[in-house]
Amino acid sequence: MAEKTVSFGQPSDLQSIFGSCDENLNHIQREYNVILFCRGADVHITGEEAQCEKAASALRLMEELLHKGQHLTDQTVRYVLSMVADGETDAVRTLDGDGICITTSGKVVRPKTVGQKKYVDAIRKNTIVLGVGPAGTGKTYLAVALAVRAFRAHEVQRIILTRPAVEAGEKLGFLPGDLQNKVDPYLRPLYDALFDMFGAENFARHMEKGIIEVAPLAYMRGRTLDNAFIILDEAQNTTPEQIKMFLTRLGEGSRIVITGDVTQIDLPEKRKSGLVEAIKVLKHVEDIATIRFTEKDVVRHKLVQDIIKAYENYYREGRNA
Image (cartoon, rainbow, N blue to C red; front, side, top):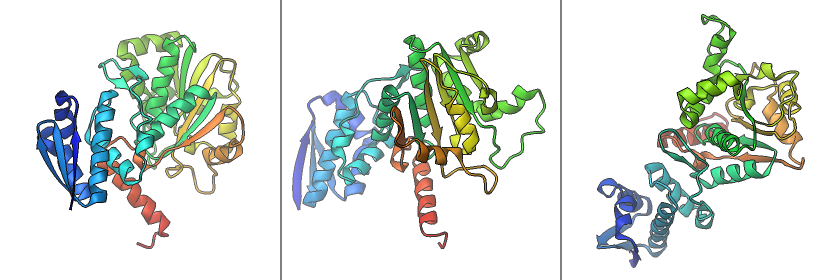
């Protein structure tokens, strides 16, 4: 049996690192099959040498992330443990404390995973970015946060959010109201993100002035979009013709972010996804980047990660399970 000791320089950090009722320490014990004993600002680790080293690395990473402004939620701790297990501790250390923007509730929006940081950095460096990955990875929310930041910094004059109006099994054509009422259910995730960033009152005022536009993809045809931050959400449900039409709307001083999950295509059978084609067509075009997320980047409930992994295994095994 081996022993290691991790000493924490700031005793005030201990409650956040240990978690409520030491839940973070208990998680580490279960993950690495080690025994943790706390004395003052020290954590003593007992177990197999390799596992003790992993537990120590996890604790040090948690302390570093805490000092960079990250909240040590259950999701953050699970992410740290998975990255340590894969030997990617140096990648986690690239996460910094820089926030993108602050919501109306005072929450600082910042990348929580290495994949999210790559995505944010790519959007800052490129004119067009394709963010591809499973649900819950923050693709849309981070893009909206960056759009709000660019608007507040006077880098763009408008924010335009759009998505294709494709049903995910349900039929919404018989909903009451005019066309806007009928398409609003498709656009609700975009509204929710904007409400978080601007607040309902400012959002409504910007909508009235045309500073913010949330509309179905069909509304983009025939337009040239200058000085705007444009987000196309749920792009896996576009056709190749639609996504080409959208990309050619790009005007001077504008940026485009396209998000989607190629495992959740709701197009009719035999219809090719425009997002799948665009990834292949644009992969060598300068100033266009594609960022791929994995289940590790999921920042929702733990079960979301488990569900995604279960489906990946199911399809990988040819649905024979």
